[in-house]
Image (tube, rainbow, N blue to C red; front, side):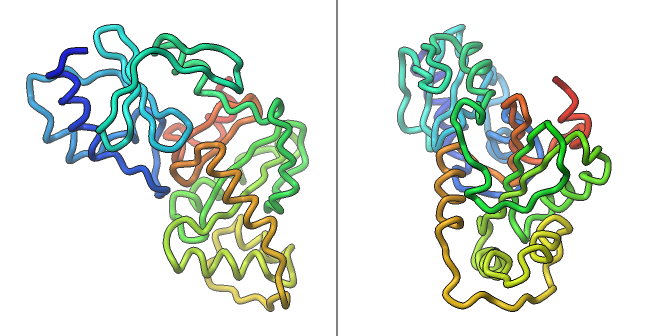
Length: 248
């Protein structure tokens, strides 16, 4: 990787938003902001890129070589990655794109019930959606549950207070509601206004587990959707939820 191309990649990556935020897209079209792309030199060649599902790392294919750059563009890591989940060395960009595109929930033995998610459906195919009470893209995705067969899918919606203080406050109210069934329906329907009586001395352990799980799985945007086969979507799938889940 030439120094010039290294600086170009770093300048583009400096605009990457590493905190959780709401949006629509895929791992390749949500990495850079529109302004950063416009600011790139007109004669530059934009490298292939992939958001590694962990905090702060982007894989780049430059001149056929794998480079991993931190999200602020400061550090470039050379060599290869080792995926402890896939138990494979990732030496090429295509390796990263292939294996890092999978979050193997079944192999990780994650007990989703420990997160106390809102559950829709009772089918054999398991889907996990990380959401936020004040996320319009999340609400749009959840509305598309109506297009699914509840006997085919079980969808676990894990609500996070990721988008500021109002989100945290609403998420806490839903989590500590004495009527959890109605609160879970509010999560799935995107109801932001219904008030709920609160459980006194509400146990926060499942809420803490949600946040830790989101960090471990590399949730960098809501909605964050994990299919039954481990493939994931960062943001709202452009093709729609039903088509995304069926595109295996």
